[in-house]
Amino acid sequence: MTSPLPPLSTLPRSIYPPSTYPPPSHFETTVTYPALIIPARRTGEIQKQLQDLVFQEPKRKRVYALEEDVDYSKEDLDPSDGGSSASKYNPNLERKLILTRLGPCEDSDSKYIDRVFQDSRIQYLLCSAESNSDETILTSPPGKNAIRTSSIRLPSSPYNLLTVDQVLRHLLPTTNEKASNGNPVIEEIPSSFEVAGHIAHVNLREEALPYKYLIGKAILEKNQTKIRVVVNKIGNIENEFRTFPMEILAGEGLDLNEVERLCACDINLTDGQNSNESNVQFKIGPEHDSLMQVELKEHGCRFQLDFARVYWNSRLQGEHGRLVQQIVEDAARKCNNDRPNPAKITSIRECVVADVMAGVGPFAVPLTSALAPHYHKTPIVCHANDLNPISFRYLKKNAKLNKCFSGRLEMYNLDGREFIHHVNQKGLQIDHFIMNLPAMAPEFLDAFRGWEFKMISCPDELTLQQRPVVHVHCFGEKSKSSDDIARVETQVLRRCETSLGCPGCLSSGDKRKENLVSVRVVRDVGPRKNMLCVSFILPLEVAGVKKLVLNNTNGNGKREREEDNAQISQKLKKSTSS
Ligand SMILES: C[S@@+](CC[C@H](N)C(=O)[O-])C[C@H]1O[C@@H](n2cnc3c(N)ncnc32)[C@H](O)[C@@H]1O
Image 1 (cartoon, protein in one colour):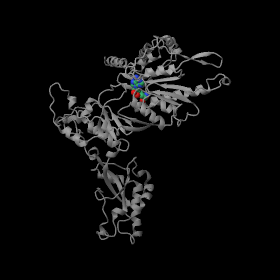
Image 2: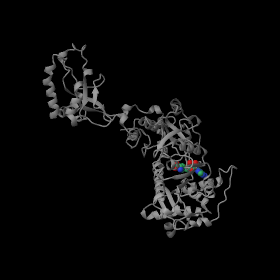
Image 3: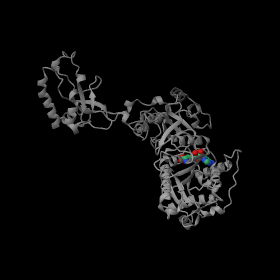
Image 4: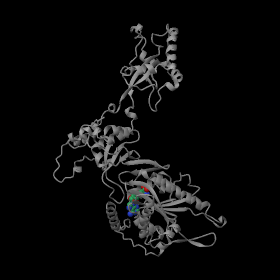
C-alpha cells in the first residue's frame, strides 16, 4: 500500500499542513461480519444462549441498532407484510443486529457466510424462532419475532481503536514500496513520546520534520482525553537550567489557519541559507504561558511546573522512586537497627538529605511529604536547592501542595557549590547528597574539597567522623561488552575523584571497597551514551584538600563560578562531539 500523502516535492515548503491528514476512513479497511437479526427484547437471552459464538473484542460493540445507512445484506422483512403494518410497527426499532464471532470474512465469500451459520446452536435458534412465530402471530406484526441470518460491513480496526504507531505506519512512507510517490523513506516510526501532564513531548529527527503536523495530530487524536498539546524539541538543551526551545505541533496554542497559510507559501532560499530556515515553526512564547502550566503525579505526590521554564523529565520517574526508596530504607535502618546498644541512645537523629540540584522537587518532596507512608515512622529532613529561580518557586509550591512542612523541607535558591559550602559551614550532618545534573554534576564535587567532617558519638564511647553518601548523576560511555564495564566505570570515577581533588580515592581497588563505591546505569540516553549514578561515601581525604574559593559573579551570591560552568559545558560539548 502506498502512502496516502501526495509527493513531498509538490508542496511549496516541503512540509505537510494539518489539512493533509486523511479522514478516519482512510485508515480503515472494512470487512464483512456474519450477524443475526433478532428481536430486540431477546438480546440478552440470545447473547447468553450463544455465549462463545457472539463477537467479543475489547472496546467494540457487538449489538447494533438497525439503521438505514447500514448495509444488512440479508435483511428482508416479511414480504407478506407488503408494507401494510409499517405505520404501526417499525422493525428497525424492535429488532437488533448481533455480531457473531464466526467472521470476519471476504465480502465475496457468501458461501463462507452461509457455512458459518451451519453451527448447530445457530440452526437451533433459527428453527425455534420459526416454530414459535405462530404463537404470537395474532398479537405481533409479521417478522417481529423472526431471527434471520445477515451480515454487516464494519471496519476491521476502527480508527478510534488504532494506536499512534498503527496510524503513522499507515501514513508515512516506511518502505520503498510505500514511498513509491517519491517521498523519502522514514527509517523509524516516530510514535514514541513523553507525557508531562497534558503535554506530549516528541523529539523528532530531521527525516520526520516534513510530517511533523501529521505526527502531532495523530498523537493528539489518539490521546484526546489526556493530551491538550503536542510539542517538539527544537535544538539542544543549551542553558544552565536544562530547559530547551520547543515548537507546537498540534493542539491548543496552534493557529491552524496560520500553519496552513505558511505551509502553502513558496519561499525562495538564497544561496547558503540553511534549508531548516524554511521550516515553519510555532515556538513556545509568552502567549503560551498558561498552556505550559502542568500538573502531574509521581510516586503519589502532586507536582505543578512550567514545562517551558523548568526541567522535568518523566523518564526519570524510576530513578526518582529508586533513590527515594533507598534513602527511606537507609533512614529506617538508622532509626531501628544500627544501634548496637539502644539503651545508650537518648535521641534518634533523623536522616538528613541535601538535594543540590533539586528542580521542582521530585526527590525532596516525596522524601518529606507528610502524606508519605514513612513520614511518622522514619523522620527525614531535606535541604533542597536549585539555581533556577522559577524551579525554586515551583519547589515551594509543590512543598505546600504535598504538605512538606518547614523543619522537614528547607529550600534554597543558590548555586550548587555555594549550597554545599553552606550546609558544611552550618554544621549540618548530611547523610545523603543528591546531585542530579548529569552534564556537570561530577565537576561540582570540587565543592567538597576541604570538607569539615562532623564528629558523632557512638554507643561504645568512640567518636567517628560522620561521612555522607554522595549520589552523583552523570553521563558516561556505553560499555561495548561485559569486559568493558570496568573501563567505563573507571572513566567516570576518575572524573569524580579529580574533581574531589583526591586522585585514586574512588577508582583504586581498596578505596572502592572502603568508600562503598557503586556505578549504576540509570537509563539509555543515546546510541553511545548512558545516564549513570555514581554513589560513594565521601572519602576522608577530601578534608585535607584546599577548599575552593567561590567567586560571586553577580554580587548577590546566587551565581558563582558562572564562567567556570560555561567553560566546563563547552569542554563537555567538545569531548562528546569528538
Ligand atoms: C537535570 S535537572 C534535575 C532536576 C531534578 N533533580 C530532577 O530530577 O528532575 C538539573 C537541575 O539543576 C539545576 N541547576 C543547574 N545549574 C545549577 C547550579 N549551578 N546550581 C544548582 N542547581 C543548578 C537546574 O535548574 C535543574 O533544575
